[in-house]
Length: 422
Image 1 (cartoon, one colour):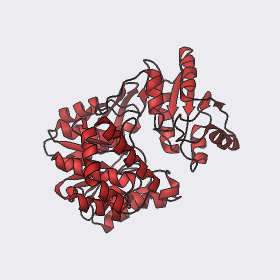
Image 2 (cartoon, one colour):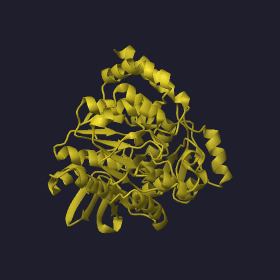
Image 3 (tube, helix red, strand yellow):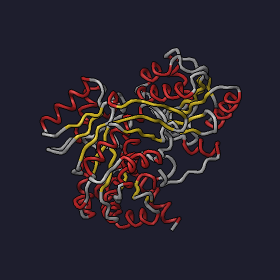
Image 4 (cartoon, helix red, strand yellow):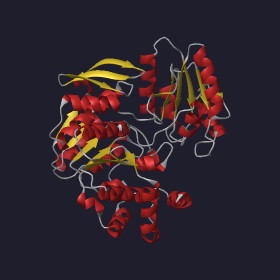
């Protein structure tokens, strides 16, 4: 089975050669060939630029605590493909991936579905076979033409929106917001993150056209109590909550999850919600790698990077920060440079061992053009050695910029990774 799994997984990854297609036709065609498994399911559909993964993880655990059998589809994965598809704490098995690929290989080849289109159908088929009560579906890119937009949800969720994936979604906040708003369905409730008036006006206009009742969740409706390396405490709606994810931004993500849960579950109570928030893990999000002050976050756009920098400064106000940075693309480099400029006592830059990210000489050239000071290191492992030395001298460390270096990070810190435990 291991060799079959590796061969078929490689076939699945090879579909990436087809690139990213915008449109729903191929996904619908493959779903029809598989038997339209999504027609049997209930969904929560989550889009946004930042925070949607954490919101999904929190909602997943809240609904589990309420006794629901819950499916979760997220992307990308950190270490293992299986992480993308979960049911009640269990990732899809190698055998189930093999069965799906074997049974549908001819359909996949004939229809020419992309990697993400195929994976989306695999997830929906998996949730149907496991008879989940509800499935939480995170968009891949955008919303309107994202492969996941074939579903009809019980509630739609749009988290915070900012500049990201400009080459695909459009080079303005207007176009990006319009794409995210594409998940709004006729008469289906929408949970919307309170943010800039302009962005929200675009979303609200689409909701008005669709007759979608909107609940706006605004950070000002909660009171931050404490942010530390173990999580975040806040009060909301007369109750105190503790979420095991660090950062003021996680307050909004948690509020979004709570409000979405209320729309699909009648037997919620404070104890169930707080227990779920306390136990939720979401690797690669302000993840503490040592007992002291080195963190890893997959943030790769200016807005996300600004938020994690604020979090490190909140937790360690007296410490200087050493950064280890790599990046996949160069479309938003000007915005990213503005976000990081002046915040690090030293910025190390590198690339990954698999060659999936910007080569370090290319990243170096981009940063030099922006007059940003940095130190080039040959590998993630070498950068981590420097971070550990600096930590001993009293600095905090922040590794950021990509999902693709997770394996190198966990290997260097000798951290075991449980695929299904979030």
